[in-house]
Image (cartoon, rainbow, N blue to C red; front, side, top):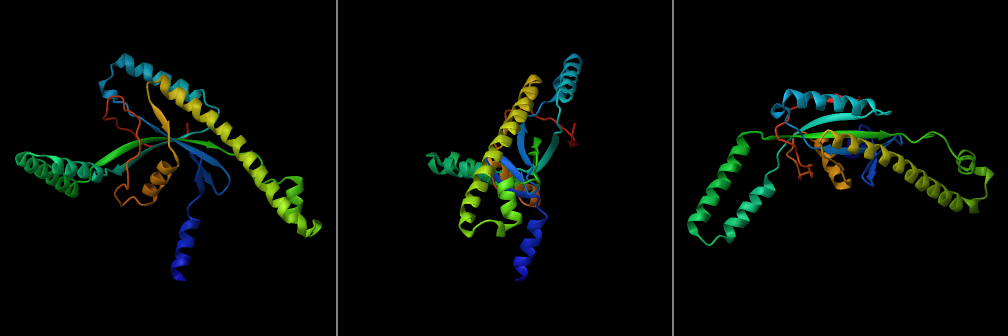
Length: 240
């Protein structure tokens, strides 16, 4: 009983209602899509290139008529898959000498990671959309919901089906508008030579798992877009 109450209290702190169609649905009904963006090492750019990038970035932000959130997320690197690959190579290797070298290398990497937190930075852009009339109700379903005794009992199933169809149609319409915003962001980032990819359902679940469990090593690897000159550093910025 106490465990169930604790889980319930924890879930109350999480604003997410569900995740599907590459979209995070909040309990308020608002929608979010998350873009993962490749990095750029500005230290390798000339002053002229930096000025051009800065100007292009400013123009990109000024072109938006909605807010975005830019996040730099640091996480522990998961090398389990890499170590498994080394073990598989060692197993298939015919040479005893190479088998020994692979084993030593694997032990070295595993030991180094145990003693040192190897961190990886991920660059994210959160694109929001809030459907209009979140608190509103349609005339037919709204009356039935507020005053159920106005309708016959046999109409309950019909009303429920109608509500489901209306909700699905509303979601698709809102998703289309959110996708338009996302496409605008992708094109704007591409103009300053930054690749961006929309996170899918599994990647979003993985991302939020890591957000809410920062002390754990990543369960898996997100599909990060190709970076432009790796090694970029950055700070968290919220809203344009």
